[in-house]
Length: 275
Length: 275
DNA sequence: TTTTTACTTTAGACTAAACTAAATTTTAAA
DNA sequence: TTTAAAATTTAGTTTAGTCTAAAGTAAAAA
Ligand SMILES: [Mn+2]
Ligand SMILES: [Mn+2]
Ligand SMILES: [Mn+2]
Ligand SMILES: [Mn+2]
Image (tube, rainbow over all chains, first blue to last red; front, side, top):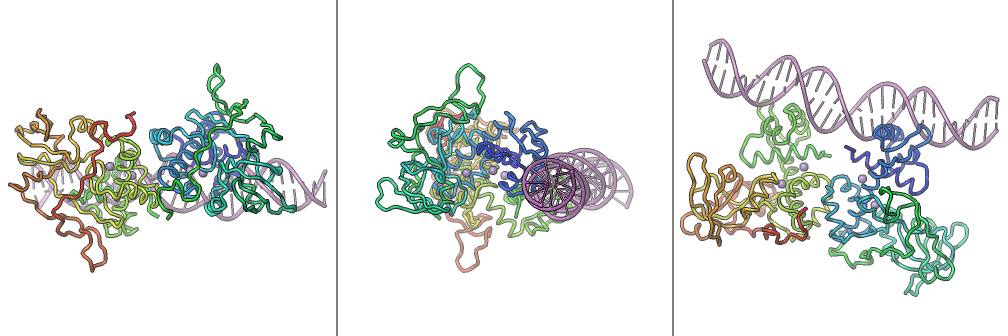
């Protein structure tokens, strides 16, 4: 049996691999807020369990088995976040911490029940893709707003677990699925000037904020000057024939998957008032 | 911080005190399925933490602090069971094990959200009273069916965590809030003959089964020959003036509290089919 | 090439929770 | 009152996860 602690380590390694960063001892330690030495210990254990490859001094990479285990927890985490948001009336900034605990504890039955109750959703409240029960996921093509050219965009996902930060974005109405135009980027780490679609007033956000926001060119703009790059480092709905094997790079469907209906936007869809 | 394990120990001790049994090392061990020696250890720790009094060789009893902690978990357990049953579509036989884990992990926010979502319920799916947020509960006057006289009764609660057993009772339609007449008790540990209200066919259940079912005389019968005993070893809605202090013996209201709407009865109220 | 610095691993300790086996204490029987 | 049986505690281990401090390695700078 794989412990909850181990599950969080695997998830951290997966996260870094997703970011195409090396899963080094110190980065895992930083992310999990434990001492470096603790990570070394755990990585050795996880290797012995066949969940990852670990070369001392050179970091870790997941084995297929470890990747499946990590994706299982990631699925749980994201489904639970959506469940808390949609059914339990949590704000999108409140879901992460609770999910971080529940993901290890809830039964498979519970998870599948949630999946059904939410009608087999594709994305969590932050816009992250929810892997399916077999570990498949088709990742969106997106780019970090901090590095985007001027143009028309849709917010795909927001990478942050910081409640204050998420609350700020909600106040600014910068939520997954929302569209806007990037009008200016001030030099020297300066702010970005945005205009939300259907809004009159431009808004300014700091570059640090933009670093957490991932966007893709919006339909209109995409047709004109920004073609889809139709490639993903992640898995398709199953290219019949092969044994299903998650995380194989293949072309991804061009049609954007249905966005999760965004019930975060201001009050709406929140059955209870916030605490 | 009090660990989940410790919480289960406290809950076990509370359970025995509720049953007016001594919380002995071996009984706690049996209930939690751990070695006697482990219980001795834990009882010493809990005493040191001021959660219970423990005299070696003579068992334990909760302090006020320990009782509050135990009631807090009991509340969580029961609210979560009801939540799983009513909202997540679990059968009444499926809720216990999941609740046993979740009770330690969900936030207070989650618990209060569940409470509100279920509209401040009074009983769990097994008919057990849910303590309120301050640890108060008014216990029903009930008697074990195995020891009841012939007469008219209503099922108050069923004490069992065994899924097979609970599934059997559901099949027999012997669920909390259901009314029936006890027609015969065969001698020598023999079966009981029951007739459910609004049913034609009598049913026979073993004495062991009857031991898990707690009943109270039904209104009609109560008025004629079985007066309420209007006493409880548990707490009232707060006799204004004193600091609130759970678990004080006082008279309890004569009107039976609203039964939880029983959504367990055959299929009904189960949004999903069973697995 | 040598030295410094930044990472990483090793070693030794601690805490929590559990177990088994042996020693005690209590209770019940003779 | 003595003895035997049952219940409980103590002692000694084990496993998991974490920490700090010291030692080791690799990469970058001099
Ligand atoms: Mn999250
Ligand atoms: Mn977690
Ligand atoms: Mn239960
Ligand atoms: Mn429990």
